Amino acid sequence: MSKTITGNSAPNEQPFSLKAIIPPLMAIIVGMIMVILDSTVVNVAVPNLVEYFSSDLKTIQWAITGYTLALSAVIPLAGWMTDKFGSKQVFLATVTMFVLGSMLCSLSQTSTQLIIFRVIQGLGGGMIAPIGLAMVFRLAPPERRGSIMGMLGVPMLLAPALGPILSGWLVEYASWHWIFLINLPIGIVGIILGVKYLPKTEKKQAPHLDLLGIILAPIAFASLAYGVNQGGGTSWTSTGAIWGLSVGGTALILFIIVELLQKHPLLELRVFRSSDFTRGIVLTWVMQAALFGSMLFVPLYLQQIRQYTPLETGLILLPQALSSGIGMPLGGRLFDKIGARPVAFVGLTFISTSLYLLSGITVDTSLPIIVMCLALLGLGMGLSMMPLNTHVLNSAPREWVGRVTPLTAAAQQVVVSFAVAGMTGYLTSQIDVHMGEMTEGGNPLVSAVMGFNDVFFLSAFIAIAGVVMSLILRKPKMEDLTPSKEAKKADPAMMIGH
Image: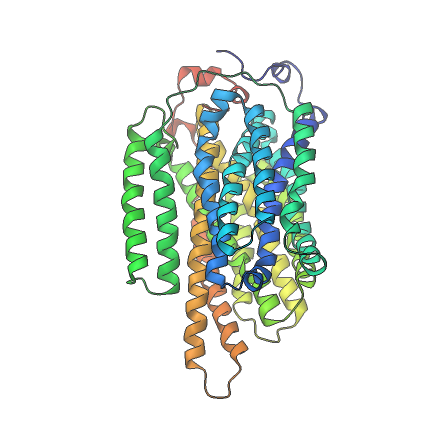
């Protein structure tokens, strides 16, 4: 088997050296930070975008949902693209396209333009995370993967920590346009580091491109997200909900059939034959739905209900990111020692407790209580996220690592888009319900807060389901999915595409 990464034989002959992988690790981290930073800065700016474009929350949230759906649409192409052009080349190209998309977003004149340019931005950045994770996974030896993945998470959490503060400062003292322009210097640094430090890659014979899968996947995911949004915001029997769910569901079924019949599928769905993989990824989806569906609404509550400025909102959100930074490496080390189940159980317990406490906030809940809830939420997120991701990768055959990372990354973006679309619609409808029940002379803010309470309670319920599901995790048994003879001989560092 030919090597796809030159100079990668050294790790097989020499002891593992942390110093040796830091330069390429930094190149990958900078590229991934840019994508994560972009998500956090937009969340804080949503109220300002609603006002600037004279739009409403349900419209502006599509700038987030459209972005995540665009990410999910191109993520599955990561394996094929790296086979065809090489992982280093594709990584650098996607970073460049993401920067160009960010510049377009900063030039938006209408909410429609912003949504379209965010989709373009998502198409550019979708492959950055799966390619980066696959490269890091291949650089780390099995016994150090939890620690290395945890180390990867610490600098990446600088983006959620600094993003809201930076976004708040830019929105308050400059303009919202700069929340996209900040990607320009970060992207340039990432390109320079990547050119200099990422290992050279060779092109491989790319498999047949699954064109039918490429067509069906975006139709399925976008239609389902639209249907969920309409169902949660209007009625599950509304025309939009019925059409969205019907078209999306049909396209999803066809997509699954096509992928299972393809010799070289867009997403390697056969890996779900592994019960350990299935348990791990379903639990990851539950955690992401609870987390990311609710995280959008904390900045909204702070700005629209409590009237905090964008900068003050960013500072209030800082403890959440800092506690994640504490939990991430701790979760990685504990995973190496005791496995995913106890760490995920504790992390999800923290998440569900925090969300339940947030479901009881009022118009005048003290700030220390809110900060405590956010810090607990961040700690739970840090503890559980990397152990679950590493558990999922370890549950797949080594020959499919390159295919599993696009699958897990695409699934995450789809789940996040569903959660954002569904919970935004749910928030809007619940606020309307409570407004309708308000007595004459009542405080509208109280009715609005009750809508936020309902969303956080729903998120807490989802997280509690995750706590229960974490009890069925077990250490992966690789005999469930036996790799081919070639895969047994191969080093996963050689296999970004397969």
